[in-house]
Figure: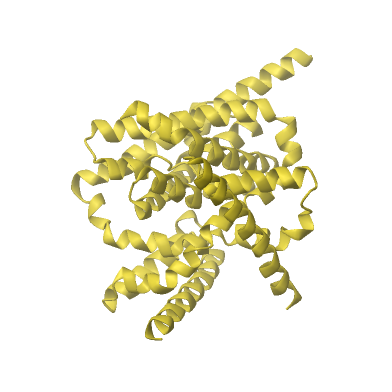
Length: 229
Length: 123
């Protein structure tokens, strides 16, 4: 009974914090105010102040966590809505995104290996370019630290938004396809949202690239890791 | 109220696809996450019109729009791992950034090259 009440409080608390963070993000609308960042920081603060262990919070948190899998399934919806973009640009989209997936996994893994980090951390770094729920599933399969995977995904997303103008100039990405594929492959939903503000067209491409990238990374990550480590 | 009912019903359809995906993953011992298999299945079924978009759209849109809510409980878990980023660990941030830059540039440049070449052939 007590567990149930604690769980319910955790769920309600998480939802309220999330709604509050949406409001904050709408008000300031900068990358760093992304709802997931504000909510995470706020909840961590509450847990630390009241000295609540993470396991206790997860009595409720796990119920929200159960919806992560169905949330990945839901990504079929934006992909289906962009099916015309997908069909028309299939080859350039597939080739660019797949190459991006290989570059993302191998560059991250090799640099972390040379720097001497342990495997559970490297496995968390591996899927950083894909959307959080998929990255977590990939890291879980590899045997890495799952919450760390989410943090690396944030680095890739926010980092990508901060450096995208520089990268666009450096690699001469002036076409909406190049920009969309680059952003979607490297910085998933966070990058896609930013690009959507500049151009609907590039944003649609980015959406498709993000979903394809999630599929490609989850398929090739285990084999590629085996080769690299 | 009707909308909430729809969201719940549509989410149940998504859960079914997720469970089928998990079943496939476990049956064939695949490394691909069951959730990703479920997503591919749903996309195929939507494309073949076996599943109508009206069966999932409210639930799917609600979830995709609020994706962050569903992984907040896991990201809070980083609280037990903050020491990873102390000292030499801060190098991980730099690694993630460099790698992100390479992914963005190389994937984008490749697609752009292919589409521009295609445009030239049509001229």
